[in-house]
Length: 334
Image (cartoon, rainbow, N blue to C red; front, side, top):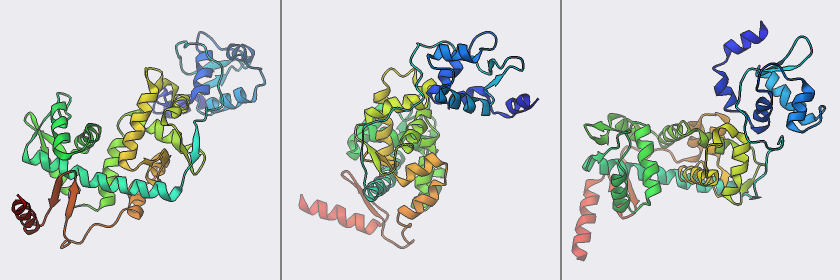
């Protein structure tokens, strides 16, 4: 009865299993099949001793989550999940460690603040461009690739940065459909009026809720020793695979995927120089990102303050007189 209650209260076995690390998955795979499996047989399948401490610790975790339970007769183990047999590999209870370097916490924080500030400057440039010339969209709803290339050339940004900005704008509903085109939405007007910390938190929320491996990578980095950074981002891939084996087995080049996610996280201020920033740690802990961002980012300028920003070769300001002076000065130089 207790087991049935625990099972019925869960959101779903598949969702829970997807979050299990490699040793837990290996045990469930070894238990898959008809009928219960005696502990000696399980140990034999994993090629470890019956009294192996790591096996016992892994079984305790699975018991607590109601994913395995012992038979009332002889203690043989049942599994709540059937996992197809996978390529045999040694039981790996200890996570692999990437190559690490010392990290300066202050330098990481300052670099993350610069990246987050730049992000909040760059995104309006893309939205302003979309207002002036609506963007073609893909069938799936995102910004068309040709438009991303055009925006990259116009803004002086590289294409991966433009792609990330465009995806975030669509996910946050700052860009929305107008027929076959994408244009800034009313939500963008509301977003633009908010404090920098709130604007950043909205973007990070959308990034975090996107591709599941983003969360896996950030949480894997969060488990590294304090004040350390990954020396080579690709060396993080084995730890990511250990952390979420079922989510990563289909990745042909996991190292490249991890490099791409860390590059995105760096642009967002989630990490810097191979180490998590306070923003990244807040995401991994499930804490309020807006509260952390408020302590890191400057407050919003006063209503009568002068708004000027430069991105690439573009100058954006809400002071029309200033822009007229800039245009006149540029004309006089020619």
